[in-house]
Image 1 (cartoon, rainbow, N blue to C red):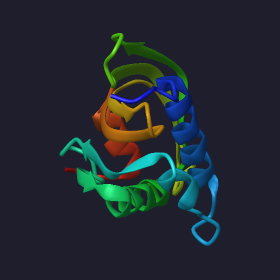
Image 2: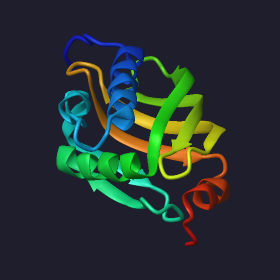
Image 3: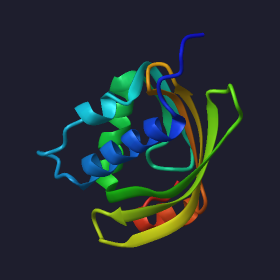
Image 4: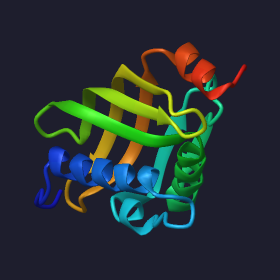
Length: 148
């Protein structure tokens, strides 16, 4: 194993910053490059089957599809006050936070506890896997006008 050049916090902060900027942009102004720079080429994200953007997203192209879908639903996706829990020597981390959503269509705002299980490559400074856990999927769906 090589030298760890990054901390989990640095990697996540870069991803969260890029995600916030992307979500706030209009469709014509969205630039995915800053998000892509935070992701491994084989990155994998799994969204719960209960949401309208459910699925497994693989690689930067898959993640770009997910970010487009999320940005079509939300004007704001802001992971706030992340607390990172990690075990020494492990690239797996758990993030406990709050997430602030603003629905693009209605302007409705929501704040929920939010948890993510994330695998980070600390040598390359990129995210390898994301698995988010939402506090209130039913309320998110209701706010989006989605009935699974």
